[in-house]
Image (cartoon, rainbow, N blue to C red; front, side, top):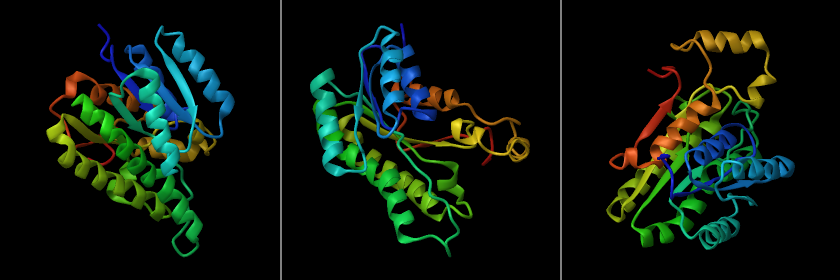
Length: 248
C-alpha cells in the first residue's frame, strides 16, 4: 500500500527543482497530484505527462499563488476537479538578493508577495474545504535562512521567517478541525539553480555541512511525503529542518 493512496495533493511552483521532486514523489506514493507553474509552460506540460505515467490523476494549472483571486480560483478548481484537497504544499518561491543598502522596494515587495503572501492566499482558500473534510495537511516551505538569517538576503529571510510564524498560527487555529500545519526548512539543496554556481564555492559549502554533501530535491520530497501521510497525524506546528545537520 502506497503512503498517499486516496489523497489529493496540490503543489505550488512545481515545474522544476524541489517542487517537481515533491510532485513526482507524491505520484509514486499514489496521490492524485495537482500542481502550479507560471513561466515554465513546457516544463509544466511535461511534468503532467510524467505524473500520469504513475497511473494517477494529475493536472497542471498555470496560476500565480501570490495573486489572491487566482489562488482562490485555483483551490476551487482543484476541489471541483479532484473532489477533495488533502495535502497543500506551498513551495513557490523566489530570491532577489542584495545587500540592504542596495535593495530597492520592488525587490522587498516581490519576494514578500511570492514567498509569504502566497501562503496566506492558498491556505485561506483551502481552509473551507479542509474544514468540511475535517482533515488536511498543510506544508509550507521555509528555509534555514528563515531561522538564522543571511547577509544579502534580508527580504528572503524575512519572508521565510514569516512563513514559520504563519505556519504555527495556522496549526493553533485549525488543529481542532483535524487540520495539521507544518513547515519544512531545507538547507543547501543542489538543483538547476546551484548547478550554475562555481564548483569550488559549492564544494566549500558541502564541506561545512556535517553530512558532507548538499541535499537532493528528493530529500525534501521525502519529508513532504511523511508530513502529508498518515504517519504524521500527531505532528503539527513544527519546523522540520532538512539540512544535513547544518543548523545543529
